[in-house]
Image (cartoon, rainbow, N blue to C red; front, side, top):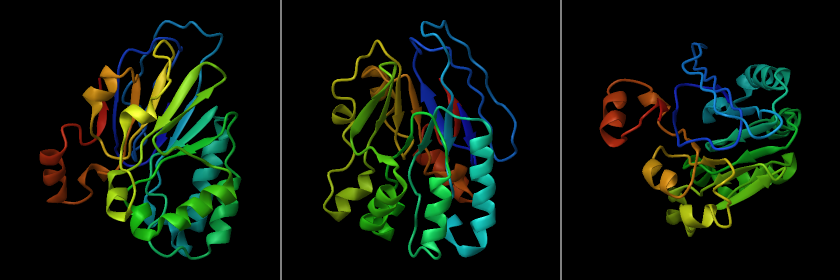
Length: 232
């Protein structure tokens, strides 16, 4: 699994089936962990964890985002996942950004969940982008890929303020075979222990931006048990 982004929180249980090589990179890009487990499938799966700062929808960042798309495609990922906060407020040059998103290439698709900012910006905008760019939106749902690995995603709890249902982990994992690897997308770095109890092998989260600026970094560490980084 690779990541392009600021520091993020992740947690995983025992990966039961795949020969994953974990190589996480942060904004300084350097690997912080490499873990190999006994393979049972014929090949490994490469997941590209694309976490974009939501402010990048401004017009001056078109070139920056194009660079991200090119870097993503250069590693030929099997799966691309985005853990929310794709948009925030107005979207200048939306058609140009949609064209760039369409250029992202992965063998088994792109999967996304909502963050809190999708609801501030307008969930209809977000759903339109997903429809226009063929991104699979997981709202308390999961997808089995090649009968080998599950990608599950929960709705962000901010949706409750906008007549949504909020996060439902049990529903997101409904009918998942725990003998296969389960990757959970949860925008907020919470409920790791419960996720592991329900059979999740890897949880990918965002939201905190590692606190971004002082004193927010201290507050984030007080609020979240796992505010950023790799945790097992």
